[in-house]
Length: 493
Image (cartoon, rainbow, N blue to C red; front, side, top):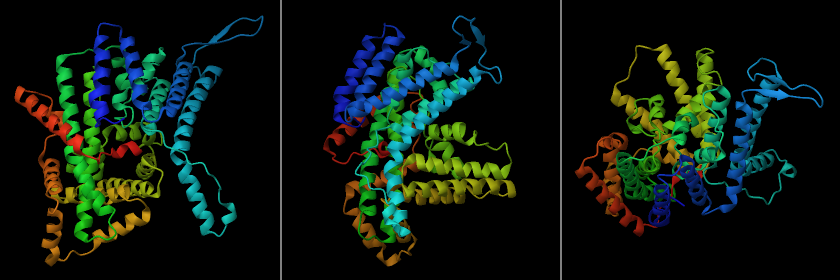
């Protein structure tokens, strides 16, 4: 089930809201239980077989967090006295047990993620290597094809943030299973984020308020996100598909397709994040911001402060810093940045394309860090910096969109060709043959360059703004009912 579907808009969401507000005077735990039930219904609608996996990992993480969080550890022998130890005492069984519990949780989560996400890729890569070295007999013969559970990358990262925060003492373990299950399975952020740290939501899971301001802002967030997805991302996606899936393409078509895909993935994912944030507000939760005009970035470092902010924060807190961060010297810091982005690329997908994408971003981020240290007084003009950053991002998106590494390299070769000026009118004419798509392409580019961010725009909502949002949302719903093309890009991750 996706947010931009008639099933969600006309049936699931009204039912979920009605049940939740009927429980407005009930205990917080009852409302959390309702969110758990609706979350499992939402998640299992298309693939109910994966409900058992999510329930099993949730249960194991909850039990292990209680093991980690115990204040005292008591041991006894038959017929002997009970002996209790403090968990943080050095070199005692309690401390070792906490570490084993942490390790078991991390390994179980990563094993599940690794198996479902990388099994097929691993088998294919091994067989390709075996064929390349003339060792066909070493190829793995398997008829099993593993299906990727929806959203496993997102809810796994959230669960890992919880168990690590509890171990570090940065968050208290949830004693009630329903409350913790609500954190994992709450449908607004279940399948595509934002990836919220447990410490950010811990108090809200225990106590939150339902107010008219939250409800109105949440509705505005949701309708604006839906409009981004339906009215902007989907038409841009059709242009991108035509360019990337074509048998041959000119330089103009290649660049048009790359820019269209850049706008598609931005409006698709930021639109989803807006809808998730809006749904959270409708249920009384305040989620963290996930986008902040990323294409206005003047460096790739700045880009990652603006794009998928929750993932950037997660990679920093649970990967970059544990690797050593910048505490071990500048050279090690550059290596840590590179490794973090390489693993971030692998998180996005089991493909050499995503590995190359991670290497590209990691290499440029490390180079920027070295450049700032070696030439601290050199600052490129903002326009130059922005164009360069956008160029790196566009090249990276080619690897994101192309079906294979070979196709990505071929696409980049098309982009690198010199475009003859005498063929520009013909190329523009070809694009204008689909005036509907051309209008949306231009509108999307204008909003990227000059539009305000949803986060700021909804801070103050006036009556004209609310009426405008309602009209825009209605237009998006009407358009949705006429569209056959409606993918969510990040659902495949």
